[in-house]
Length: 86
Image 1 (spheres, rainbow, N blue to C red):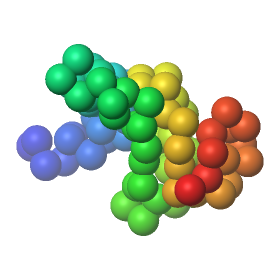
Image 2: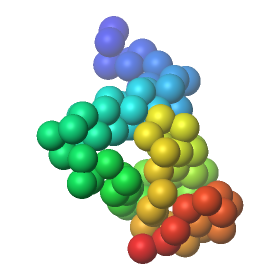
Image 3: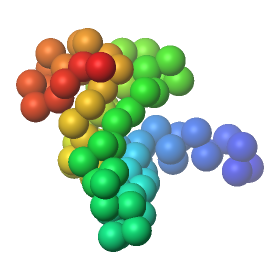
Image 4: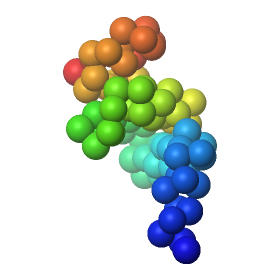
């Protein structure tokens, strides 16, 4: 039963899940023990996304959750001008 509903649940709450995980990672990185990395959150997940729209949703969630500043996707950098493509 879980195998049937888990993908539906993940798709429905994808942005919230990604934003929460990005926020938690950002908290770990910027907690003082690793202060030199606090502005270096980046994402390189384009190859893992099933399509461009799905990846743009993940990028938006990372911007909200962790203040994303660097992306590997040129389209995301065009859609979200606060990002740099790297």
